[in-house]
Amino acid sequence: MIRLENVSKMYGSEIPAVRDASFDIAKGDFVFLVGPSGSGKSTLLRLMNRQERPERGNVWVAGRNINEMASSQVPYLRRTMGNVFQDYKLLPNKTVFENVAFALEVIGKPKHVIGHQVPQVLELVGLSGKEDRFPHQLSGGEQQRVSIARAFVNRPLILLADEPTGNLDPATGEGIMQLLDAINRTGTTVVMATHDHRVVNAMRRRVIQLDRGVIVRDQERGVYE
Amino acid sequence: MIQRLSYAVRETIASFRRNVTLSVAAVITSAVSLLLVGATFLIQRAFDNLLVQWRGDVGMIVFVRPDVAPDALTFIEQNLKSQPNVIDIDKLDYLDKTASFEEAKRVFAGDPTTLSLLSIETIPSQFKVVPKTTDPELVRSLANQYRTLPGVAGVSLAEDEFDVISTLSGFVRTVTIGMSLVLLAVAVILIWNTIRTAIFARRREIEVMKLVGATDWFIRVPFILEGLVQGLVGAVVSCGGLWALNSAWTSGVAGFKPGTGVSSLVVPGSYVNGVMIVLLIIGAVAGGVGSGVASSKFLDV
Image (cartoon, rainbow over all chains, first blue to last red; front, side, top):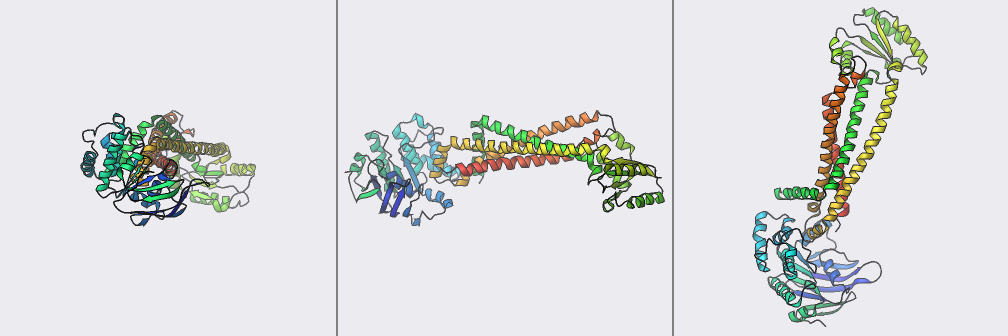
């Protein structure tokens, strides 16, 4: 589903953010990218949805080399991926329903599809009954659920999550992980960057560890070392 | 399609509201600059009316009595052609009664009383003379000579009548066109800046839109539309101003004594309508260009 071939990415001209990274992520995998702040986890995620382009190497997503993809095609690539962030990136002036519906609206989905899919996904993330709340009326965990609902509402092939539990207390974070696990079980490939030992150790999934931009470990059913 | 259209329209209105002060500034600036553009057209046209008789370097007009005998007319023409040193014979032009009457309709557009006294039967025909010499005294002495010929109703010299106005017209045109171009540039820059601010205000939203796979055009269209509407609203306001200006001018001119020449400064309504259409087009284009440039430059999130 995702393949990196000898990928290097520099910010400025000095230290590379990612150096010579190669790995394969199969369809339906759940993969943790771990490592300290600044080790290149977020950069890897940004390379996968073409928010960044590498100086060297190739990034393949669903069989297409996305570095060679025309800019006009990038929106269609992104429709196959959902994104979840540490800071949720919800729109404060829109309700829960509107935030999720927004993702479908801006890719031109008709109203009846929106009216059908949004309540469904809100039920999946456990937010039924809170459709008309605004983000500031929700707890952090609930806001992250909205963000996950928005990422998943279009049934993406891939879900990219950047520190989704970073702002949450452990119990709330656990709830979010259960949700991501459930989404993974529907066949969606999940790639999650984190430095939260607890969630990595609890899940026992594939772990790719980074240190200063270099992959130092790639282990099935790994733990956070 | 309809849904996308309604999305674009909704976003445009919402953005306009968010940015009221900047939007209003952009609208007013484009209105003022377009009003000046429109006024330039009207002033030019008014001067043109005044100078229509003298178009093409005509320096002297020999008016021929409407009841002239054919031999007298031929004599005048041959006499004119026998002065190749003073007169540019190739450019010598004869306006018969019909052509002269058409011209008079323009000259006396604002002076219906005078116009009603004229008819194809009673109007003098005219020879338009382009002088070859640069010596005005030579032309003047020639004019005095023709005044005494049989069949000649009168001779007018450009120098006496409209040279000053012709110079003035050129000057006014340069100044008004220059000022309106500067103001138009200011309007485009203001619209550009308004759109840049609008994009900045919505940067979070735009970021989310890009991440969920909205196309660049989908994101861009509401902003371009907003700039276009600002330009267009400015143009509508300027059209209103132009109309008011022209009405005031027309009724002001009507107060002058007929036959003073001022009356020919009236601009016909059909021409004003044409100018308004031009203003609407310029306004929309200016707004579209300003916002188009801003939205392609600042949407790289």
